[in-house]
Length: 273
Image (cartoon, rainbow, N blue to C red; front, side, top):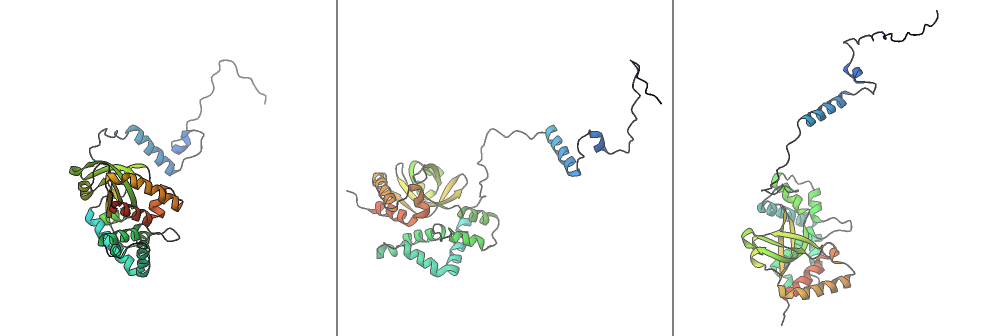
């Protein structure tokens, strides 16, 4: 049998048709076969392309859902009460030791002052860290107390508690809002509290523990207010405290909370001529 060259213009014979029983994946080309999961993913992607999600509204009349969920003041108070009971029951001697350290340089009258003792308790729950950096609120969370809903959201907020030193710029008692700047972290901050919004004025300073509250912060514990006329004294005091501790302002709330508290307390109650 010899090879015969094709004549110009001769049409190629028609290709054999593919039987209907062949898989759909074979008719998609020469690429690799798709798994069932890949086909489902492609179908979902195609559906999203045909029906894109509606654009987000340009207006935002309501604040976004807070990262830590929604809770009420009563939920926080209930959770903190449970936290305090847990700390006393499980770590009574340790709590007493931390409290004694907090009042190390205090006068007998200060040690018996109810507000100052509350301030010490707040520091003990949220501020004191063991050598591994663990707080009592962390231990309480790890204990697996079955909290759900708003109480769980309140506990999540407690885990983010921080000590703020705020220079007040604006006060709106009607909205229970205080706006200012955190002098320790050099960032703007908004506090939501009825008592502070009534007591503070622009130019004042306030030291307080706070937890996330929507898009702002909710003060907890006992705050320390300094009148605006004491601001310069506080600035000098912060510089001297940082020099003595060989620290920067940013380190004061997390590493030197009691020193910071007593500095502000002494200046707030000092006699100024």
